Amino acid sequence: MIVDGRKYILLLLPFILAGCMKKYEEEWLKRNKLEPWPPGGVFITCEGNFMYGNASLSYYNKDTEEVENDVFYKENNLPIGDVLQSMAIRDTLAYLVVNNSGKIYVMNTNTYEYVGKITGLTSPRYIHFLSERKAYVTDLYAKKIWIVDPLGDHYETSGVANGSILGSIDVSNDDTKFYQHPTEQMVQYGKYVFTNCWSYDNKLLVIDSETDQLIDEIEVGKQPAGITIDKYNKIWVICDGGYEGSPYGMEAPSLHRVDAATRKVERTWTFDVDQWPSEICTNGIRDTIYWVNQDIFHMAVTEEEPEVAIPWKNTIFYGLGVDPITSEIYVADAIDYVQSGVIYRYSSDFTPVDTFKVGVTPGSFCFKPE
Image (tube, rainbow, N blue to C red):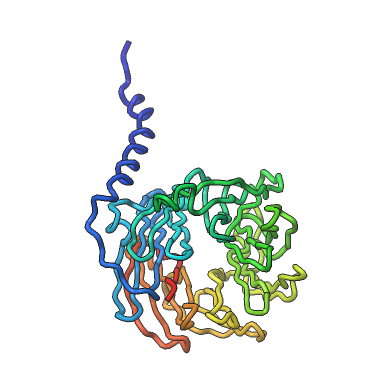
């Protein structure tokens, strides 16, 4: 009998890869430490390329205008993984949501040290903290929102934050054709958490965080790509409208204002059908919204007509963030999704302040507390 060794290699490959990742995680102690930078800086999450495992994290010192790229790997000798979708900070811990790797890494924001992880997730997108020991994690493919303990059972005694899954909230509508509902970003009003369903969907879902139950859904435009909430508890939803040839159909992109208390759509703005708005967010005092639609637009939440804040640079404006303290604006330019991306920093009156390079496909910003 002739034995094909290639088959055995393929069978062993998952175990080999798992062993490599374990080795990387064990070697995080064998590193050359980076000097901690002062508070008040900005983390930039860089997605990398899908299936390439080249996600990275950069840190920008606003005072000195210095940037340190790939801080997580440099500190821990541990690659982040495949597609760093988002990041959130609670106290001194940062939670790096690695979408295609199905995990969340936990990092000390002052030292960049790896302190734990949360695994067992399908395709995590964003994390939203409800308390010290409870958070929601949205998911692209699981048809559920994960309920997690961000710290895990042994954090108080060991300082290791290996979080655990406490349960999940079923959000499936049993529509197998479009795999609904995928969940994305989250905002909170009282005990209610609202999340947008982007891929082949047109809903905001409402979760009661006390009972962990889906209690309502709100119809908006096709493919709600992002949400934010203003100082008057109005939820702003930006929808990209889908794409030509989509099995879910295509419509003009739109912006919706939803009252969080009544859960009613109060006003809708419509864009040209060939546009692709995204990345909606507020300024520090939440009285102005910003979004990307080639140009960077802004509009006071009490006004009716948006204005161009930052003109398009004939490139790919891919990410947008506004400093919650200074209301300075950070724009991520993916360029071509292959080379290192560029970040543009602007003052609150849209005056250019700085430009610097980061990793591949910079997608979001996470501002370190002062």
